[in-house]
Length: 220
Ligand SMILES: [Zn+2]
Ligand SMILES: [Zn+2]
Image 1 (tube, rainbow, N blue to C red):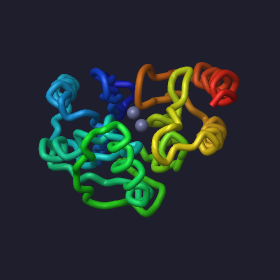
Image 2 (tube, helix red, strand yellow; image 1 turned 60 degrees about the vertical axis):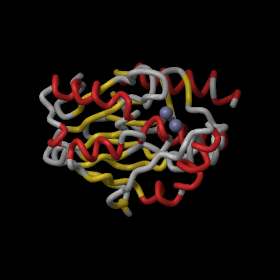
Image 3 (cartoon, protein in one colour; image 1 turned 45 degrees about the horizontal axis):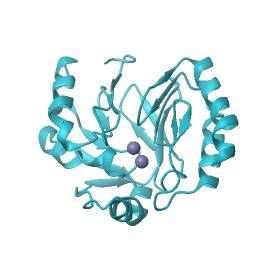
Image 4 (cartoon, rainbow, N blue to C red; image 1 turned 180 degrees about the vertical axis):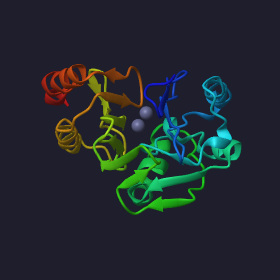
């Protein structure tokens, strides 16, 4: 489903999947391909929007919990794209990939990143993102912020009327509060979380931050 000129949204397809976002530009990017078992459906959805997986150059993630990155390797095979992550996702690999899999009694996700970004920018062409480190749900959470189009792809940091959980390895309620406080200062028209509904419209996004600050953060 097309959200803006360059941005597509694919809602999660079931338990343990996640919302997927695709940026179609000079360099095309998929953020969080989700669970491998839903990949055939995701590829059909892309096809319906006129996107060939081979158009995708970069596979990246908001954070490395299995529900977001399980299909990284399979999508890499289908697309020929490269898995490019933030260098903090390398730094916190042990907590986010290894220990979190153990926490759920699951095998650790296996994939091979091609490279790690050592700056906080990812440019696709017309659209460019600032990468904002937003720990709390996981130590490696990165939000993708496009200032010109007022888009925030926020992973599991913020949801519609909720926040990500903070009880997984490397999680911290205090850090989550600070991250959300920082993100709430940004101008956002499209708040695009890793699960459940998206929040569209400046006023609705503002109200969502207020709701979370009032009803969720105080109780974490
Ligand atoms: Zn997560
Ligand atoms: Zn998730």
